[in-house]
Image 1: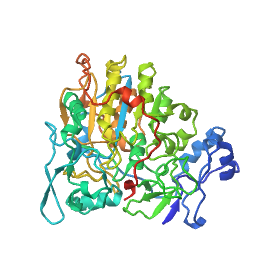
Image 2: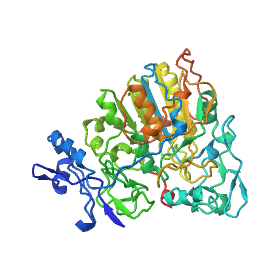
Image 3: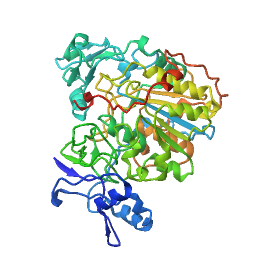
Image 4: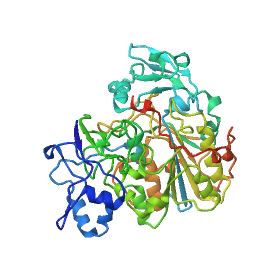
Length: 500
């Protein structure tokens, strides 16, 4: 595999990037190139501490960054997303995006009234496999690398779920190998999720924008793409690994860390250091003098800490104050009246719904955040979007639209919660992660990121802003805020099954 760098070469009046010098300035190590210059498409750009002294030069740099390459990405029109693109309203002052892990609609919301779910799925033998109940905290993992998507998708036949790689930690508790992906979570395990979906809005055509695991998925949720640089044809496609084989991700990754890239032909034959140079939604939020906050399990490098993967954000003053830990900090911010304009809330591994590593507390965790908002001063002007970052390898019977070699992926659930949300509404219109970005952009008049948000709808069909704000009804859950607040901090990333 060739190694690519996610930045263009820069020369600002003779100043060239010097990795060692910048490491001293920023206090963070930087990756060293492992290849000869002839294999390098681009070199690491200077860190933004220098960029602040050369703003004018940077404008020229970004304008020329893609020159000489045929890198234009054309997103086909999505007719289903064009409808309902109505203007939103200033009634919404806050958006909370809760990100959970690794589930499909058929797996997590099977049997939800009004939603399109299936009880059996095609297999590679030409028959059908019945979906079996599998506990939310089941101790086995299913591959959700891009190669796993291709196996399961099988050219649109959706019959490869019995051939995907799995790993069982306790074989006495596991289904047969060729049946493990054909599972649904019993309703008893996820009552809070059903209560939210039935009370507010649910999307049964919400597709993961990418066909891969958490690291690129979180990049899409923050920026609408996993491009390594503006207009690059190369996308981060997998979870990055440090030299010692552990998961990492972002500009604070250890030197030598690499993420696999995918090209327009679907080939994964190049790698890059997982730190990228293009804008994300926090950049647009800051330009409007609004606030953002990203809640995670630990600071800096990690699969789920998307802000760390964007160089401009990582080196901004806001990163140190707005990329915060632990996730329960959101509960404190809500109670203290300091909720940001836009918040992203990621879970601990135990509360994530992640196959093989969660403890079954995900529904209670999400309900706790929703209840905190619902019982606060923020309820009447807030929208809460609950989304799952990728499909986790689980079966789903709906074939996703195909825009290119890496977009779109299988369905993931989306719950839309607001005092203006239509009660019990189920959307059958095509949505993707870009729809969440488009909703925020439209509501706060931010402009566009120029990525998947451009082809996406803005979720306006979920709302009726003419109605009086609905009174919040507390979501019942086994665990409460106090249970999460007293838990010790956790720095655990997902288990090794993420790299099957």
